[in-house]
Length: 84
Image (cartoon, rainbow, N blue to C red; front, side, top):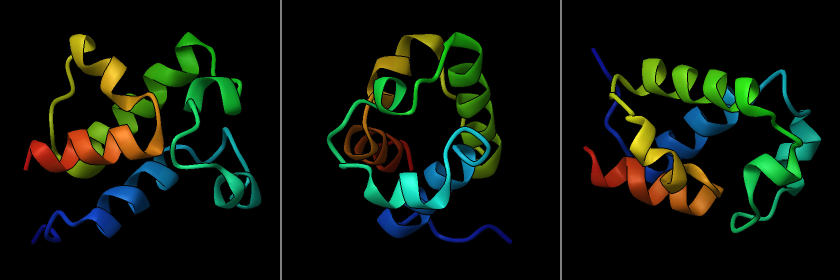
């Protein structure tokens, strides 16, 4: 059974999808409005991996045209909640 999609669940999924690209302390100190790619120095392949992990964890399809919505923790959260 899938857990309900709440803001906390989405933020947890985002942090989980970023594991391996950033430490827990890096993620904890990340400003929610800060650009994820710039702050965590994600290259294109890293970002694609992040999107795939997020998509699998939340069981939602994320199109390439939606990638801009995943720029920050806040924008990604808002976008993903709007998809539920």
